[in-house]
View 1 (cartoon, helix red, strand yellow):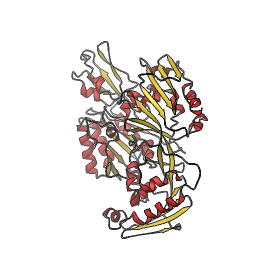
View 2: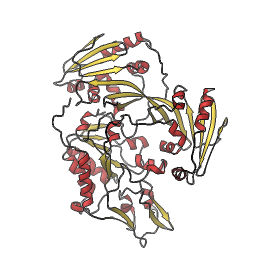
View 3: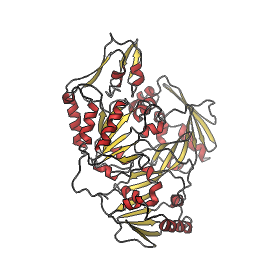
View 4: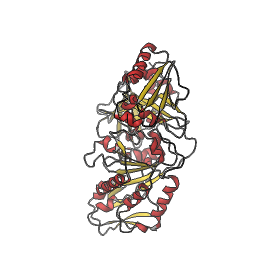
Length: 535
């Protein structure tokens, strides 16, 4: 009975078809959605000026099918309690996952992110690759829903056996990586697992542990109060881990637990389209992992290529801008492109991915499969190759990107991307997401004073500029290229592509590029900071 009541709750969510955003989102579009809630079925049809639904029937040819895998959190949804949820990619589609807190951490100093200490612990090597996917989530390793048990202890004897096995077998002091990680360093780790306690001492040439006791001088404490995932963790069963920060900026590890299976008729559809459906807001109650205690400004923008701006006249503007920051950066991390990994890009190499700079990047756990700490020379060569490859440079501060990877952004984390129109998360949001998510607001800003103009006499309406526009800001109107300036971010890709020279970039004042850099430098500092403790 509860499944039918919940389906009724889903389908009868208030939909305001007169809402301007709703009408823009479904302009010229009819979208059909089937629902399966553990035996109860129904459907929805979204149209520009109409919303219909029916309980007890499914449509024969839906655009999307959403299937509930568990009823466990239904009461919370009906009560509109806040849940931490994310849509994650999986084989054959997507899953809406609830993020359950698994491990919380404490360190003896706030200057060191626990993520970096955890990355040194040999047992965590299989978990660390989950920490690096900040902008675009890694695909689910498994779509198994993990049953959440409310009572404890949960087979405590087996957990004790697994913990003892981890303590006694997980360390090889002759391993070269182990020696390198603990060269001239001692790391003491406490474990608090329900009623179980233990500690480990890692040193360059030795390893010791004691079960049933905590160490008074531990550098790091790992706390597991939620025992539902403990056996899976210590057995190294496929589990979907995700990094984060709690309200006190302590590093935490979540488990992404699949709750709703999402399948699209078109397998190339991105999950951003779900944001168009008002009812999804009642289920996907996404909120930041960190409840912000202070406002930290995001700022950034695309840097157009080959235009004369200020002191950068007659040079490749993006390279010069990136070079300014790279040459001053205290630490540089090069990462493969998560967007192209996700989209299985056939047009551009995944190796031409992101650059992260500044002191806050010292707290990133680097997975060898995805990223490495780079020299300035390597970063400059990476930038040059990406620009030569036709990728669109994007540079700025994005707090969510850092904290999504479990790193507190203190104003020393600069993100640099090289976007392709086929896979870029911004491009996909523009193509599939709501009309409100498009344009040069928020993080995707157009440099002030920059304008792209069209010469109607030269434009033949070939549409090549429409094809390459990353945020779908162009269309052909009456045989000529037309630009919606509200959506344009000024990347200049259309200008480079036009075969007839009908498009051009103009800027009101050459000083705007310098002001852009000055503004960026005022909110993110990539230089080495004093008294920064790094382990």
